[in-house]
Length: 112
Image (cartoon, rainbow, N blue to C red; front, side, top):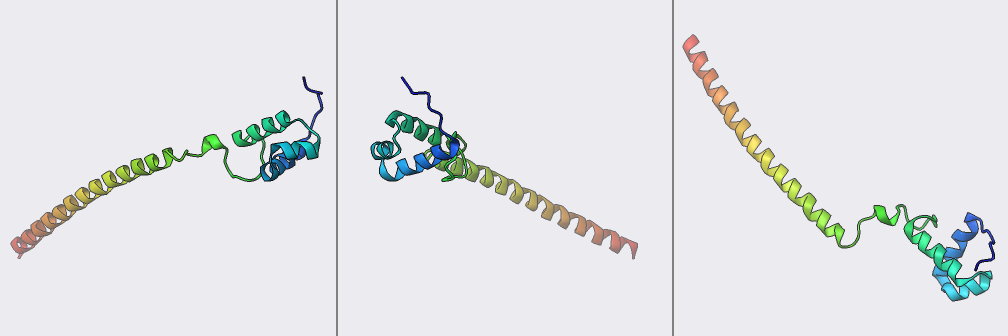
């Protein structure tokens, strides 16, 4: 089992960065710690539990490569529906404006 040795957060962050640069086996040898320990830290870094400063969000907050186009298509459909609704509303308002302008002219002619 493990030796029960505790590592501070800064050491873990630097170890993860080193591991990404030179590989798990070499980093473990240089740091004198088990490869399994580094593997666990790498997993935690991918999960966002160790902040290596390499990204601004945790993976679960980010959209996967599959979800990004799906989300973009969904947003596009919503925007197209909203544009259609606004065009219809604009047409209605133009017709209403013309109607009231015409009735105003009739009222002005009757008054004369």
